[in-house]
Image (tube, rainbow, N blue to C red; front, side):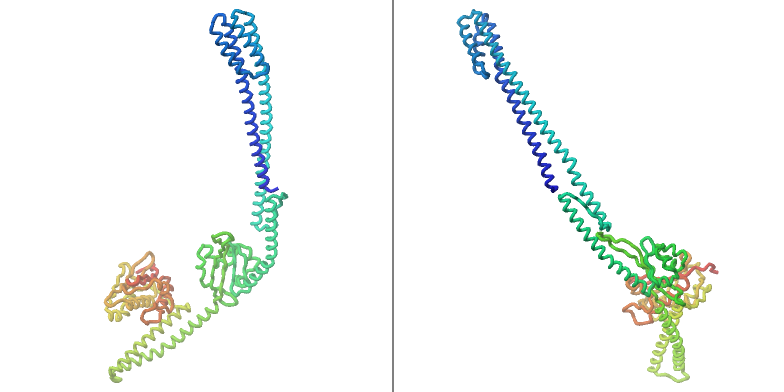
Length: 579
């Protein structure tokens, strides 16, 4: 039976029973009211009239008005005849009263009237008793009918109260638990409702859905396994080392290349916490140090030097966070990380070959350039012979070009030293004033051409610095050269030297056009030149300066505001002894 039908029958039956109970109660109450009204209107009034007539009869001999009172109540009684025999008794009273009016002193007539009134009262009292019994019977029937109907209503309501909630709530609870099992991928869950109600149809639909999900899951399982094995084979055959870990830092997979690099066996790696593996393996410990420090994944892209394949190899490390959006949700969820080691050894070898080539070419260039400059000096010597104006202009042009070539060659030699890692530092206690004077003198001619004033400010307590004086002078000179080049005529370039905690900061500030913010991050890149500037230099000066400063455990930085000038600064460690 349908749930809707059950509800309609149960609630409808209860409604009908309540309606019947109301009708029966009203009907019986009306019957009792009628019986009571009959007693009050008919019999009680007769008894009242008879009593008044008896009282009047007692006063007939003494009160002449008693006849009128008697006649008045007798007339009312004649109009209130309701019971069998009551009319005859009333007529007898009338006959005897008429005779008494003619003979007021006749005691026999008075006695007859009393008997007639007594008979009249007896008739009405018997009627009252009869009607009382009828009303009592009606009341008993009313009580019985109302009690039976009320009991049926109670039984019906009790049955509905006991059965209806469980008939609805229990299937809903069972169905909810089954849906939860399906959500947990338990596709073998089934619901069994024997009834033919809506829940039975719902159970059939649910079971059909579960069977299809189970069939789909089982049919896709083989494809999923093959796909998993395909991915594992792909990862194992990658030339890059790959290590996968879950959100709890447990190793999920590792390919053969990673096993070869780390020197570990697969059974001692997969399934272990990567922190535990790192305890006994220096390479793994170096790979996960950013993860342990909770640094960003992008910070992991740094070359790693590893001895592999019988030689020193270089790998670029990258830690990738894996985030997914679960089905039915909106927020992403972190499920693990992948550590990739990309073999960049061939690129390093090519870079080294390029560096060697640049070093060789630059070294070979210096000899012919020196010969050209010597030839220019000989041509300018008056003992060789005088030069006309056109020849002198040509010689000046050759001198400038050879000077530019020599500068480029020197920068290329410096960059090859930096790249090869064999930059030679001659660090010692050097005079700060001498470093600044040498750098200023090297750029004095260029400053005078543009009428630029170089202002130097040195903190009084600073006299010495532990550094390579020649290379530090070269860095400061390069910064001064750039500042003068990009400054306006008749302007100022400031050189400021001051202490900051355990560091000494050298600042070169100009008031030229400045640098656009989008180029600040690339200003120290090799061969980079700001678009729109004059084609001077090689774009290597700042890159070499950065390498030289960092080789001395220092840092170089730039601050600039477009239209207001730029400030280049580098810091070097404060010497322990400045004497």
